[in-house]
Length: 100
Image (cartoon, rainbow, N blue to C red):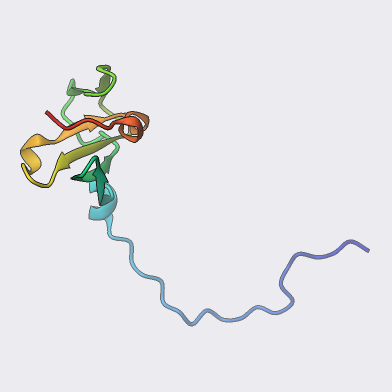
């Protein structure tokens, strides 16, 4: 006889489910990373909230990132948000230089 993968007893869930914060999802996940002694803040972006026709140039590969393309925004902690640059996800992983 085949084995059943269904649970034998169903337990009522007593833990509460935390409500999803849509602002965090829309803005992306923010975290800190250190590369070559410089602390960077990075934030994921889907690029969907950008103006029509808005594009960015990845400072690592020098190719365009169009609206709607998932990418990563990075800036260094010392100079602030004014230094932010938009990277392809794979380009950020291999990026080792300073943000200019």
